[in-house]
Length: 291
Ligand SMILES: Nc1nc2c(ncn2[C@@H]2O[C@H](COP(=O)(O)OP(=O)(O)OP(=O)(O)O)[C@@H](O)[C@H]2O)c(=O)[nH]1
Ligand SMILES: [Mg+2]
Image 1: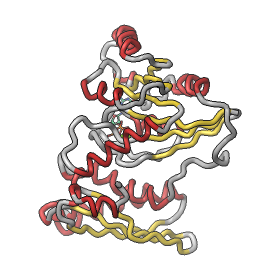
Image 2 (image 1 turned 30 degrees about the vertical axis):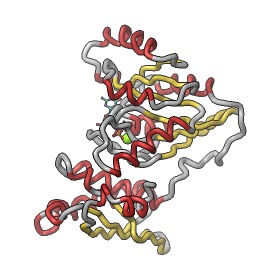
Image 3 (image 1 turned 90 degrees about the horizontal axis):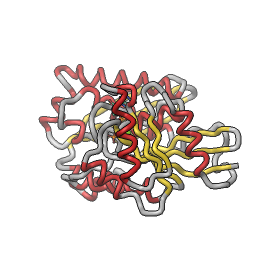
Image 4 (image 1 turned 45 degrees about the vertical axis):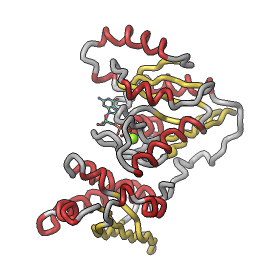
C-alpha cells in the first residue's frame, strides 16, 4: 500500500485548484479567472486500489505582497511544498515567468517535484509544446514533467501513475470514502467567496472575506448565517447593490452550490459588515484563522 501527501503549488492562476478538482472528481476548491483565488489549504483525498493520495491545493505564490493578508497567504503557499511527500509544481503551457521561478524556488531542496504543465487544451500551436517541455526539464531536477489539461482531464490518469510511483509505502491515512478533511462550514464560506470573485470588479474580491457565523443542522436543513467583511462603506454599497439585488443573487447562487455539495436543503442568511482595513489588521487576521 502506498499513501502520502501531494502538495499542489505554483504561481497564481496556473490551474492548481482546477487540477485538484479534476483529480478528486468533485468540485472542492474554488476556481476563478482571477489570480489569488485560493487562500486556504484545501485537501482532496483520492483512494485507489493500493494507493491513497492526499492532495493539498495551495494558494498561488505571489511575488509582491501588499498587505498582511497576502503575506499570510504566501506563508501558506510555502507550507504546502514543505510538508509534502511529493510536490506538483503547476505551470501554464508555454509560459515560464519570473513569478513561476520564484514559486519554484520556494520548494525546499531535495523534494520529489513533478512539473505539471497545465492548460494543454488551450495551446495555440501544439508543436511548440515539445521544446517547451524540454526547456522546463532543464530548469530543475524534476522527477518528471507531465503535460495535462485540468479542464478536459487529458493525461490526468498518467499524472496519477507518476505520482503513485513516487509516494512512500504506508497504510491509508483516511477511510476509503473520505474526500477531504475540511468540514461543511469551510466549504460554505468558500462557495460564497467564489461568488464574490465571479461577480465583483477588479480589486473588490481581494478586500472581502467570508465568515460563517453560525452553521446549524435542523433535521435535513442546514441553517447557515454568513457575514461578508469589507473594508469600507463604499465597498459595502457595491456588494449589496441597489435594493440588495446583487447580494441576493450571490447568496442564491452560493446556496444552490451548497445544496449540491451537501446533498440537502440550505437556508443561507448573508450580511455585509465593514471592518476597516482588515487585510492589514493582524488581530482580525488571527481571528479569521490566518496566523
Ligand atoms: N483552458 C484551460 N483553462 C484552465 C485549465 N485549468 C484551469 N484553467 C482556468 O484557469 C483559471 C485559473 O484556474 P484556478 O484553478 O483558479 O487556478 P489556481 O492556480 O488555483 O489560482 P490561484 O488559486 O489564484 O493560485 C480559471 O479561469 C480556470 O478555468 C485548463 O486545463 N485549461
Ligand atoms: Mg486556486
